[in-house]
Each structure stands twice: as C-alpha cells, then as structure tokens.
Image (cartoon, rainbow, N blue to C red):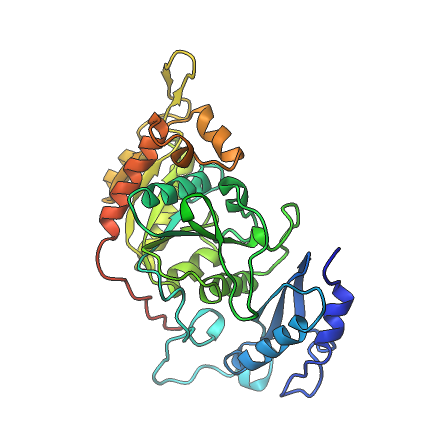
Length: 377
C-alpha cells in the first residue's frame, strides 16, 4: 500500500495522550475502524459518552499527528461515544429536572453548522435495497442542475457507496488539513462519498456511532460552498444513518423511491413513517421500474406490477412524483458513469427523471428548515 502504513499511523497516534487518563490513545484501545488508501487515512476514536463534548481538541491533535507523516494526503478522525463504563455515576437513575437538547448517544448536538452554504438538503431514501434509489438520486441531481440550480450530491451509504461509479468520478479529495474539497462531476455537480477514500472492494466494518460521525464530518468538514440544493443518497432501511440525517441535519424533505410490488411498498411505508416521526416533510414518492419497455418494439410489460407507489402515496396523503420505466439504457448509462439525464436528456426515460426533478424543485422553494430539537427522555 502506498502513502502510509498502519504501523506508522499507530506509532504517530501513540504520541497522542488522553488528557484525563494520562496514557496514549492506542494503548488505551481507543482507536478502531482504521481505513488506509493511498495516503488517505480514516479512523475512529472511541470515548465514553460523557467525555465526548470536551474531546474535540484530542480528535484534532490525532489528525495533526497523522498529517505530519510523509505520504499522508488527508486524514479524517471521528469521535464516537461507543464506550460507557459501568460506574456508579452511569448506573445512577436520571435526576428529574430540565433536559437539554442532545444528539445520539447523549452527546450534545453539534454546534458547528453542517454545510452552512447549502440552501436546501433533500434525502433520497427507500425502505429496502435494490429499488434503484441511488440511480434515482443521481439522475434527480442532474435534473435539478438542468434547471439552473447549483447542485451537490452526498453519498450517505457508508457501507455500499455507489456515487463514484454512477457519476463516473474517481480520485482523491484534496485537503488543506482542515477541509476536504468535493470532487466535480459532469456539469459541475459537486459530490462526496466514502468511496473516494477507500477502495471499491474494501468493506467498511464500522459500528453505528462511527457511521454517524462520518456522515457529520462529510457535511461539516467538506467545502461544499454555496449550493441551491444538496441531494443525499441515503442507505436503504431505517437505521443509524437515516436517523442521523433526519435528526441532526436540516433536511428540507425526503423523496421515497419504491418499485410497484407490495413487498417493496411495505418497507417504503416504514421509511415514510420514520421521516414523519422525525418531522421531516415527505416531498413525494417515485415509482421506479414502473414498467418494462421493450427496446425493440416499445411494448410495455408490468413485470413488478404497476401503480402501487401511486396508490400508496394517495393512501398516505403524500405527493406522487412520477414513474420511471425499466429500460436497458438506464442500466447501461449508470454502469458507464454517464447518467441518462446527463447523456441523453431528451430521451423518454431522462424526461421522466426531469419531471420528478421539476416537481421536487417546486416543493423545496422556501425558507430552510431548521434541524429538530432532540430531547433525550
């Protein structure tokens, strides 16, 4: 592996001393989830949740220790409140009285703004995988850009990042030691993904809190600049990553992607319910793979059924944004890193995505929504 190796990184981190315990963070077993790729270093520092708020200087010290190593291009360290020793204090029942706003795991909500120059952040989500959510997110981003908006896309699927391949973007984000620069895709769309920092076939063996911290840093420590809209490609399901985005990020709304069949719609309804419970507006539903269109004769076949997402949207009282056909050209252009909306904007399938983009653009016009106040009960 070029750049720097794990032994060199750990040697540097042994010089970083926990201010409360007087020992280095490596011998204390605080380092986990290390990922190295050609000079890019990612790792987590696990701390007790009650100490999390005051250990930001420790995190920065650890980053600086790695930045000083020859061959290091960028460093990202995240604090995770994973450890919680069973002391008399932590076992004591909570005392009655006023409760402060807190983030996950009891840590105070992040005071530094996340992506302060972004006017609207929208999540593209699905209840389950395999429904074409990432493809929809990318083409939605290009559809919004075609309307003259300044657009960025954040790949929030830490475990299975797809944006680098779908957008045909590769390389390593530049860093000044404090901020990462997003990569530019066709048409000037800014993008950031964990896929730029680790090899495509490298598994991310990270716990939930580490994923949460990584998402916060990709918003807070990336120089997104001034954007009209950021599209966030969410991982499937309703887990830690989704809750982090819903609770800590001022989302303008969420777009739910589903295929027409009942098994997908069951999970799509769960996704809608999660966003509603976290006070995130649901901008609408998209029915992907709505019908198969034969590339030879143009005949339509409803392989997965048809109209299920529209019926579900009507039943739940959320807008229906449109139907996307199942055609080989969408798969081919996605695999090639040239999304259909960017490559063939006048095609039938591209126009379907563009119609969704116009509907979303109309619904996000207005003031930025503040992140909800989170109270730990």
